[in-house]
Length: 346
Image 1 (cartoon, rainbow, N blue to C red):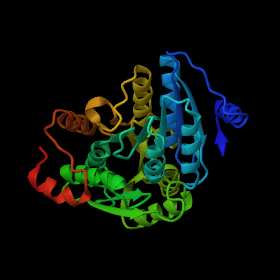
Image 2: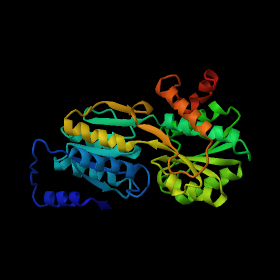
Image 3: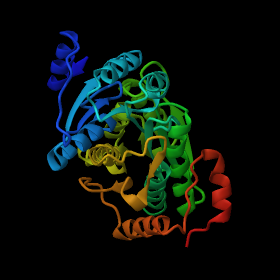
Image 4: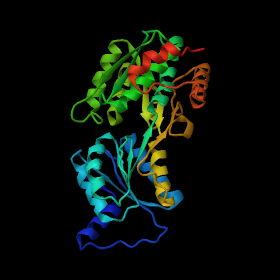
C-alpha cells in the first residue's frame, strides 16, 4: 500500500503514545481513502487527488491519502484515520466504500465523512454524486451524429462498463439515449467486465472491445476506470474510435479517442475541502453535481480525430438545452425508451 508521507508520520505518532495533534483554529486537514487501483489510473483517483492538490494550493488545506490494495483494506484505514481525531473530514472514494463507511461512521459520530460517487444517509456523512447520464448523453449524441455523417461500416456503437450496477447504468442510459436521440436507427452493444478487478482488468476490456468491433461497433465508450485502457488498445489495434471517461483521456491516443466525458470528481473533492475549511459541510445530505454546476462535461480537446464543426455545434446546443432544463436525460436504462418516445431531435 502506498501512503502519503504525512500520513506515515501521523500513524507513527499515533502508535508512539496517543499524542494529541494540536492545530490552529484556521488549520484544515483532510484525509482521503482512494479507490483500489490508486494513483496513476488516469481517471477517478487521479482526479480526486488533483482536486485536493488544488485545494491545498488555493485554500491552504493539508491532506493525507492512502491507496488501499484491496476492498478489505477500506474499513481498516477508515477506522485508523477516524481514530486519529485530526481530520476535519475524511473522504471515501467509490461505491465499494459504502459498506465499510456505513460500519465505521456510526462508531465515530463526531467525525465528519464525505463519500464521493455514492450516497449514504448518515448524520455525519455528506455524499457527492454526479449526473453521469448528462455527460454520457453528450458523447452519445456526438457518436450518433458521427455515425450518420462520417462512419459507414455499420450503425452500431459499443459500451464497455466495469460492472452492471446502478451507478454505471446511468452512463449506459445517457449514452444510448443521446445516440438514439440524434440517430434513431443506431444500435448500442453493451457488455460488462466483471470479475475480481473490473476497474483494472485491461485484458478483458480489450477482449470485449475487439468483440464489439467485430459486431460492427466502431465507436466504443467505456465506463470502466483503469480497465478502459484496454478499450483504447483495441481501438488502436483495429483502427476504430473510442470515447474516454472521467478525466480528459484524449491525449492517451489522440488519433483514436474522439472525446472524453468529464466526471469532475476533482470538483467534488475541492468542494468538500472548501466546505470543511469554511465549516459548512452538509453532513446528512447528498450534493448532486451536473452540467449546470460544472460537475459534468465533455471535451474533444487534445483529440486529433476530425469532427465536423456542425456536429460539435449540435452537441453544444444539446448541452445548453440540458442546462436550461429543456432536456431531462434518463438516469436509468429502463427509462430510455420512454425518453425517446417523448423527445424528438430537431
